Length: 345
Image 1 (cartoon, rainbow, N blue to C red):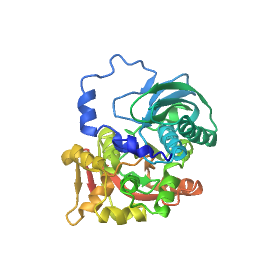
Image 2: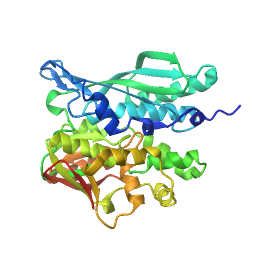
Image 3: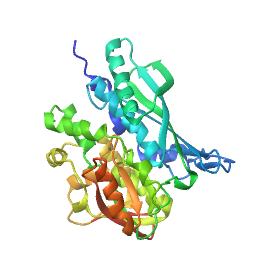
Image 4: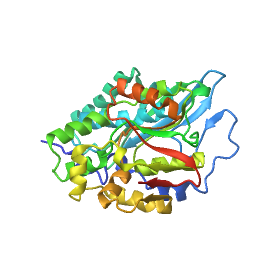
């Protein structure tokens, strides 16, 4: 019997994240009180992971990420979920140490061999990252859920918060946009084999370059682009850093098949929810089309690093990314003094 994992999902991958505006309301009345001085990063700016200083040269990075299937192949689902979870460790500038598995499976509906393939997919990515899955937790649920708790280590001076951008910094994106659109096309059985291969290629590519970028003095801030879309995660940097940002749409790296599908009207529901959540904090220049809006709001599962760096460091950052196989990496915009707004031109 052939099992289609996505039939169990009301929303796949990072597209099933709670919308930014809703999440903000949910967390508004639960601030972290009396945070210890050694907690270098908490919930203040919606950063990628918590960071706790152990001593003068070591800080531990802790994060968790999990979601429902974005693809039908169980092994690919496991790989994508694991890559996405470890991305938050790299986005803080850390190297992962080990992971814990987060597993929720509808045991009455999924054969054990399918579940085992999901776990094997996650294990393969952790092996690629050079870390073990050292434990975890599992429950019986209605929808398949898989992900990781990721633990990493970084020098306290090299932690890259999403609040560290400076006026004049260039903005660099590591992976092309369009993963959410490809996932929507997959559900409609409109995705080509080449498009699926491109989707798997990028969603299973570890953002390990982040650990090396963190040691570069000219790199001031990092995050990764996931469920809130490019505009949403850039807006988090702007708010944390108290800066404005301008993005040049023509410079954005885009997945070619995703562009074709979005022009034909295929997009995720999360894209519209993201746009509604931004409010007036994100604006598009007159003349940009609705399909272009859909790309900047497209939820990226296991998306690329978004890096703020000094202009004189941009070539070094791009060279590091491209040396690691991120050939689509590009400078896409710039930060400036001003209210925390994102403008796409």
